[in-house]
Image 1 (cartoon, helix red, strand yellow):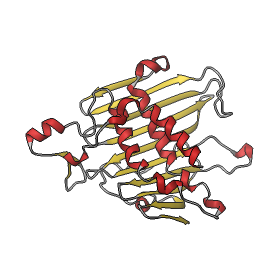
Image 2 (tube, rainbow, N blue to C red):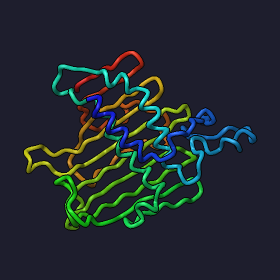
Image 3 (cartoon, rainbow, N blue to C red):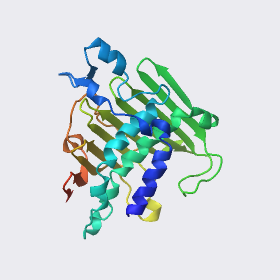
Length: 276
């Protein structure tokens, strides 16, 4: 299990580009009463640190992911040592990786020249970076779910002032949506990360597996990593409540309205799990 987790994270970090050296400067942010991130009033200090976690122009997406990953990896020693005799919880230590892997894909867009043939774009408008791509799969992939002719669309925005990331992926087959995934990631003023990841995967009915949407809600700080796995109706046109501009939220609050499956809470001294 430990080796498996290490391999996954190494693969992710390879595509986080040079941003792995980014220093966290979230201390330069304040939190106003409306739950929005604002910069220090001190003009001199603000002029030096106004980019927050972003130090290299053109690498903001990689830097955002790196800041996220850096907080997560602090909890991995405890996660890797977790053991359970409950078969329904044997893979719970992988739950936090699901949204992490989805968010890691944004780093590709800081190296647009490598994927220009897939219609990739990355546009900057003030504090907001818009990015995405749309292409048709030319041949079958390694997975049975990756079929020739599938149309893959990715789209996202990163607000570098509010530190809010939206990222969505859609696969269409024969003119119909067959899978969709949405993630929202927020960095609060104290460096805490809030993440919600919602996905309707490829149908598994033909393989004897009941179809359902899956959701992961995460709260990650230096003191705690908590993730709730939940499920919802199998509908690619699902709607959801945004976590943007809401301030601090516990995972149980984010998961309201979903059928909770299990929870994992990681602290410096313990890994606590719960099956709902």
